[in-house]
Length: 98
Image (tube, rainbow, N blue to C red):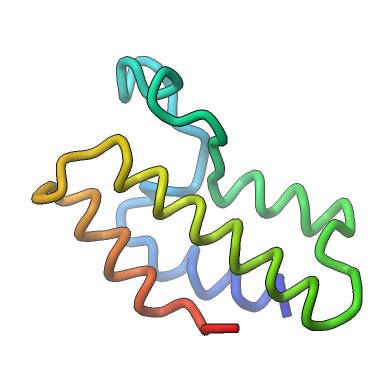
């Protein structure tokens, strides 16, 4: 399930905004604002390490929380009216609810 959801979200991330960790070059001061960073590459690592392999509902909830963290961090750092936040909102709408 985790792999399928990640593949769907990655496919629909038109600009690969959330594919990799944010760098200071891309977003100065990002790590001063965002204390718990998350991106699709970290979710991939967690899938590969079996971190979402717990019993069904707990695993799905953990995966969902990590996706929400990606988008919450985006909203926390970026201007509400910006394109990045709009992309995050669009992707969030594609995320299956738990």
